[in-house]
Length: 183
Image (cartoon, rainbow, N blue to C red; front, side, top):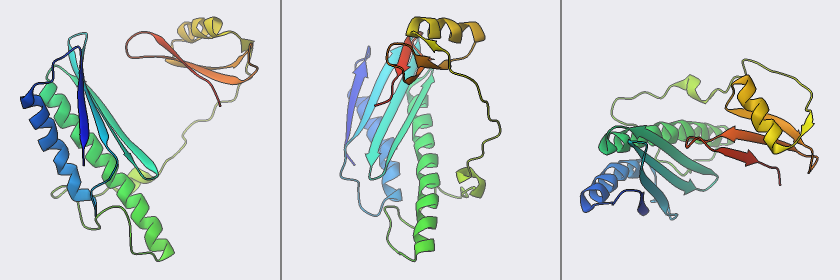
């Protein structure tokens, strides 16, 4: 699998590139054939924290993990661990569907696990534990941001008065705000 490695506010040294390549090559054992798509790795330093973001586009799914810590190498290790968990979870889900349909082929290697790590069956069960209902008040984006800050949440769903569509404003990790609109 090929990765493009880039740095934001940090110079990507050969040692960092080698370490990232070495760690991400651990993921190859989970695939029957190496994925043809190229993944991206972004290394950055934000407010003194070393952040690593890895995105791997696959057929039908995009694997993405991000971690921040005081040490770049620790962040890389944590991201690879997160990606391995995602792959194992997705592999279990996909292979279960293939077994139910009676198909033997899949994207992932059948017996690959990370050492003695067992796959948790409950991991792929998604459970809604609470449902809220509320009326969407038409408002502009600025008012939605004020409402979000007032209730102390990191996102807010509202009816956009300009477009008459449901939008979401959210607080980004950099302290700024984002807006999600529907297509």
